[in-house]
Length: 291
Image (cartoon, rainbow, N blue to C red; front, side, top):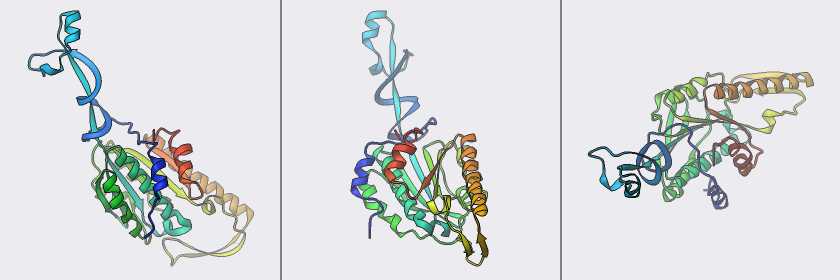
């Protein structure tokens, strides 16, 4: 089975790491620094010695200067849990959006495991977020597990908000990534609210094709709903209709972007025509999502 992502691209990903903005509450062992003090090797600050403190952390050089006991504090290193959700509805099967979404999921999974974080990837199918890869840690685990994404099928409908509310999302222990075209009548915004209420860092990746963002169709067509094939529409597509469609697309994407911004979630519109490297360099890096 053809890999979702090749070795050359994985080597490029070594140049990046995921940035986590919120204070973190994960387990010991990762590369992210929390605002709490702990037992890592990175010095953070001093405080007065209190009877009962660990005497091995006393800075004796400062005692020699000030004749007062000070304790050295170190940053606590935490292991984050990156949770990636892939919309597996039928509309994602068009124009290569599904395959592109899998590559994004594979890329972010790799970025997370190289930071020694834990990764779980979910397929949103109907109103259920099915774990495809669970608790993946380390590059060896990544290389042996990531091929599971190749078995995902894009069909039926997805209720992103309902699936999110039914799944375990964790509290304040990392980033949640939603990958979808968000071309649905469902109010998926509740999913973003639910994740932010759990103090998750949220990244919303909206994938659209060039054909969807800038269609060039003209004339008479029989159109079919991508997620409900029983619904068809006869249309005579004119230039005015294309212009109206373009405004509608801009309204939807800008609306989602503004909603994310209002809830301090990251948002990015991604075209299937974009090179994955460009998504990282020109899209995610300037936003501070990768570092």
